[in-house]
Image (cartoon, rainbow, N blue to C red; front, top):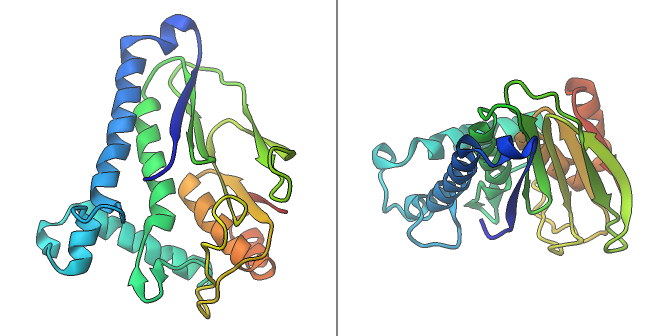
Length: 229
């Protein structure tokens, strides 16, 4: 997916280095690799790109394509149009795929007894734990978007996801779906709650229009917290 991904485990040494843990980590990375096979926009042979060209019939496509398409439509609806998988008229669901993919990878780790885990995918995170583990929270630093390397705030996350959207790392790569205008202002929006997929969607929506998205998020999805910098 064009980004660094790391997996961190906590627990007794015998548990984090157990065959079950090693297998689960390998399965998590394998899951992400398979997602890349299906959804990469950088590879002409990915199923997404073949489908976009009309070279892959829907009946032969991986079911993930239809699942993600449905989730993108739901995200567009829930955010009042502040999240969209369309860019300059072209379908690109990768803004949702990352959170969805990392959550899928995390499910492999959630079966390992007596560990807690955190997956970091380009600064977006999923935390959780396996059976029989009494976890302590992961302390996550939120970088000040105007001062590289400076921590503006910290968040404790035991189980769930955290995502940040903004221009500090990748420049003006986001557009307002309502008019197609690029968003070049400084700052960031961070969201954390039960699901990384939806934290990521709402972080994007909040950066596009903080005022409108804040009202919707706080009114309809109170399980999610946010910080706009």
